[in-house]
Image (cartoon, rainbow, N blue to C red; front, side):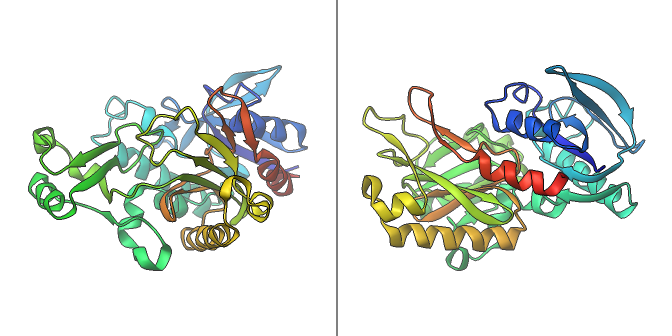
Length: 322
């Protein structure tokens, strides 16, 4: 019997309709011995080499306390940017992130954990700053920059006109802003630029390409909304973005565009080592990578599930743990 650890956002994993909830169901239906570690809260004892785990019993997570990791497989997702990392003793959220990665690597090298998916190095590459190391033309990504301070930001805005600023570690548009030349940026005079990433402003239709086992599995496209800063227009629509919709020309989707995006998705996934997650596009260029906790569903304006790619993820997880 395999022993499996699964990182979850415990606030939403209780709902079987979420990706985390579906993952829990797959694990509980398997023959594996499964324990869960929540990403919300202080569930790591780094100095003691322990983690706080729980089991899923009769529809609820039951606290099992702290113990040393012991697993054949750890399905890992770093979602702790929502935590108060300062209260946990870290001066920067990124310091907490790196401590988790080092902890995982130690558990693998010591033999406590057989394998981690996604690997710690891949999780590091889902940070926004990873794109600053890559050639935009080679990988089809939006040009991404690391700046040293507010004077470099002013200079970049004079050159570019507009820039998007993001936390290096974050999600859900939290802390993301669009800056234009002439904006009042005095608030950045005291900002910690080591935790910020800047990208060219590159509007385009939003696409999410879900990755399973390093390959494209399914996708979604938001038509008639040209950037995350636009509200869903009354006539915007969420469309499946896959071979079937591209072949049929659904919503004007071009097969050549789809094939280009699949190739770019699998190229960046291979480069980053991404086994589970998603590649997000704005138009024809890649905007960012997401790790194992990414939602594998897409909803429309009425919050009805329009596309559900969880079956691809579920099948892959079963192949790992059964």
